Amino acid sequence: MIRPDKFTTKTQQALQNMQGVASEFENQELDAQHLLLAMLQQENSLAASVFDKLEIRPETVIADITASLNKKPKVSGGSVYMSKNLEKILNSACVNPKN
Image 1 (cartoon, one colour):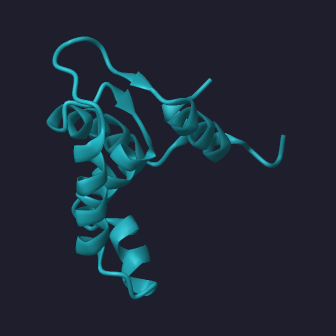
Image 2 (cartoon, helix red, strand yellow):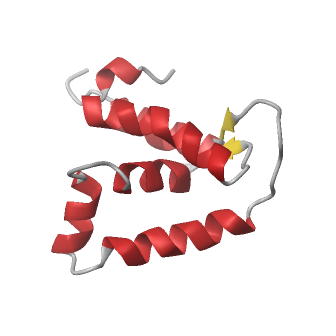
Image 3 (cartoon, helix red, strand yellow):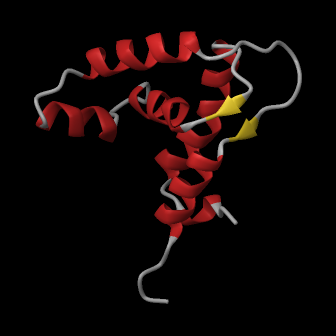
């Protein structure tokens, strides 16, 4: 079970914002791409800083994600759900190695 309280404030904000990203692209399934795009769109984005350090322009990553999300099936209305892939990623991120 994913516990948002185990994430940083910025990650919690990105988790909330990814639903808006999915809505913008009319995607019903929330996936890692939605989360990464939400993270890259944040002010003072840590994700953007990581790409900068890797000498990858965040704008290029955003353009690639946008192109990919535009290819996903579009659904208007209905509820959104989290992909198994994203759920697995978030659960892995919450694992406390001391337990």
